[in-house]
Every structure is written in C-alpha cells, then in structure tokens.
Length: 375
Image 1: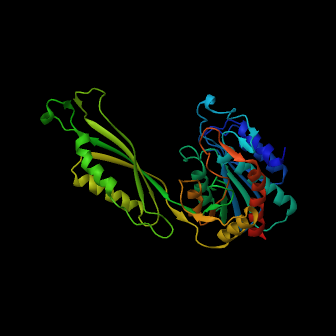
Image 2: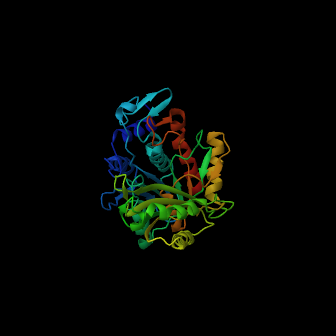
Image 3: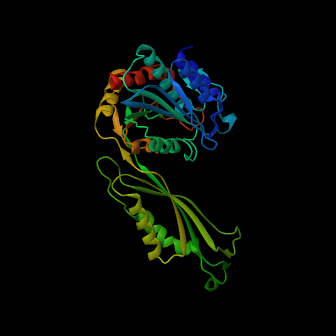
C-alpha cells in the first residue's frame, strides 16, 4: 500500500461526522510534528482546528482542508462499509474519500516531502484543518481567520484541497466563489375556519403574489467573473394539519447565491421592498454566511494552471461556480486563493470514491505548486 493510499484509508476509518474530528487531526499532527512542523490545536466550542507551520517569514503559503464528513446515509445502500475503506475497480471507496480526506492526506504528504527535501525553504509553509466545514462553519476556519486577523498572522497564498475537478483531476480550478445569503421569513395572518374567510387572513394567499414576484425577478446580469444572481426557495410551511383551518402563520426559507454584481445589502433591501409593497405582516432574519471573492490573475493562478497542465495533461477551466467553501474566510485576509482537488462527482453520495490513479498523483501536484511558489 502506498503512503497516500494508507493515510487516506486511515482517515476514512475515523468516523469524523461533523463536528467530530474523531482523531484525524491528532494523527496528522503526530506525523507533521515528526517532520519538523510546529502544531497548534485551536479548539472553539465542539470544533477542532489544527494549525501546523514550518519555516518563518514571508511568503506564507497555507494548504487548507477539513477532516469532517457528512453522514453516510443507510449502510445497506453502500456496497461496502462507508467507514471501512475498500479498493475495487480502480477506486477507493468510503465516506470522505473525495470530500476531502484524500485531499487532506495528499496535502499532508506534500508538505512533509517538500520539507524533507528543502528543510531551509524560504517563507512559511502551513496546513490549516477544521472539523466544521460540513456543519454550520461558525467555530472552524471562520473563528481561526478572526484569530489570525487579531494576532496579525498574514496569509499570502492559500491552496484549498476541496474536490473541484469535474471529470478528471486538474480539469477545473476554482479561483473564486459566489456569496451565500439566506433568509428566514415569517408571515403573520389570522387563523380561522375555511368556511368563514372574511373572519381570517390567510398568509399563504397574501404571500403568493409577493413570492411570484420574487421568483420572477432578475436580480442582476452577473459579470465576466460570476453568473447572474440566483434565488431559490428551499422550504415553505403553513397550516395546522387540518383541512378546514386557515393557518395563522407561514414560514419560508430561501437562499441567494450571488457574485459581485449585487452586494448583499442591495439584495436584502430589494427583497424587503417587495414584501412591503405587497403589504405583508412579516419578519425576516438574514444570514450572510459568505461574501463572494475572486482571485485575480496572478502568480498563484498561473502556477496552479501550469501544474495542472503538466501533471494532469489537461487545460484547466478557471471557475467561480459551485457552492461555498472555507476559502471564503481566508480570501478576505488578503490571500490569493485557489481550489484544486479530486473529481467531485460522488461527493456526499452513496459509494463515494476517488480514482486510485488520481489519488497517487495528488501529493505530487500539491508539492509541485509548493515548490514553484517558494522557489
């Protein structure tokens, strides 16, 4: 068994359901400490964060990942134990195989291997891991970034090992992410009997025209870096369960994914204006979980793309699509950020897997980026 396969398998065996790290970071810290890294545990609430560094001064290059995973779903739906790594048909199966224990293992080995060859390298090399990426993301990298800001810890470059590739390793590099803005809406009505609507006020009926307008609104046209802003209603609930009762309240949840064409404050103001125009009695709570960010053309983007061409034999697409990642907390520190990792087709699914041939190449890909950035 190779080093990368062995380490990835060891991580998969640990049932690190968010926010439980289940010993993953302790395993990696012991390995990195033996390689000369300084390891610091930053625990906030129930969340473990590992900050491992080697060297000093600028530039500061951080490799970023998470050790937590989502639940496996029904065990009987899997062809093998989701927490018992299994190699078959040229793939490694297990929860977290792609998202993102293979990336974490590969980054750890890349750092170890580079430092073993270049113990006196310029600048600072670091690994930052959290157990809160798949959860609320409140006590993970978000808290660590706040700690960095208050302590003056700079970050010049950040490579995130999230599974970004679409069809083969290196075919897509994320150079930014859209922001995420969620709304929790409550609409008040007056409960009553369905036979006497004049004595009640149905919040489903009062919301319907406003909801139609919200869904039909073209929020912006996007720009060359980001697609148009997207609004999706995710939950809608009203009623007592009885068919002859007009409900007295309605709750709805929705989410914006937005780029730099529309600031979050503008989206919030436009939504509230529509709701007021329809004379709704409402309350609306907002949760801005991440602002959009974009790494402009520069040294990190150029090196990452060149390494993908040479190591993977593919011209990478530069994208700002997909969901959110912990990169949204590091980019505001002034860092150039890219995301490169395994194929994401099976993440969060039954029988999650990573191709063995691509797994074997992953440490070398990260090590090449390190060498060129610090060279």
